[in-house]
Length: 166
Image (cartoon, rainbow, N blue to C red):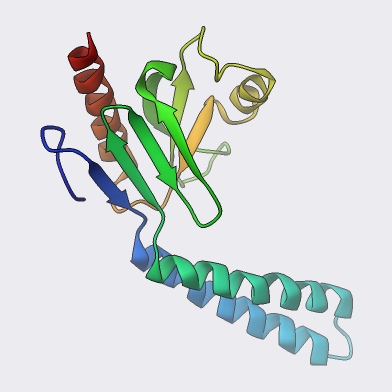
């Protein structure tokens, strides 16, 4: 993590070690798909689909090792920078940040947030996300901080900068 609430911006990167594990998993699953295609008794359609999927996954996951995703916390809000997009979530649009599990029984925890009821972020998609995942939106997972610690930092940043804006 770089920066502090008193000296913004605060920058949090995605974990390179988790990206490396993802890359190794893609390589292993690609190898398994290649073996499936060569096995005369295996379903070749699944093998070819695996080859296509995991071949595409290798450069994308590999890219995240060299240029990790990042969250940038500023007095305006939190900006999430990923491979294909960047988006600003303004502090005034968020009620709270919290860790959550995307599926029942999952050990994985992501960073979720709940939007303010009168926010322009409230809409049909938010209602669907809330009913499926239990959070209005997500900043994903795999960050260099534990989910509970990151949610706490985001809530402190929101409170700090909303208070300064008053």
